[in-house]
Picture 1: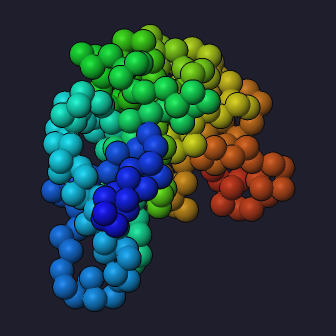
Picture 2 (picture 1 turned 180 degrees about the vertical axis):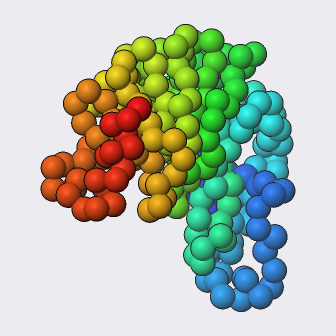
Length: 228
């Protein structure tokens, strides 16, 4: 009776997330579990058990379906220590109505456009979707501002459509002008991506202020941007 109650509480706590196991993740050994509390070990085992029962199967890039017909985006929730955790599948959007992915995604045209767990974009015939990972798992949502017919990836950091510019991890850059947005080719020495438009210079998603541009390194980057 106690185990049944624990299982029900666990499922309810996850709401629109469904937990599971992925063959490419860490194979847990006794050396690892010896360093982890028994509560976390039990939590992972329970999560794996639930998803084994749901029989998740990949049907598109990162998109899975279970035996009940629910679809979900693959995600990994970290516990402690780092890299120890469990897989779950996000089966609802994080909107006000917790809309099921089934109600929106077109399975025949859904695909990954670019990116990875740090930040990625997906599309189908009607929508652009954005995802970024955290220690608590993935955040998968509709990029409502995006125009699917003109959406394009610029480089590893940026994407744009006819109206807006997007950063790979953080999504919409509200200040950016799509028509005049240009990016610096190749990574800068500090590893950041740089870009400009008619109004601003950018490092990643951040608008650079005047005092940011006064170092010798930034002056050199600005000079290269101005030649685009």
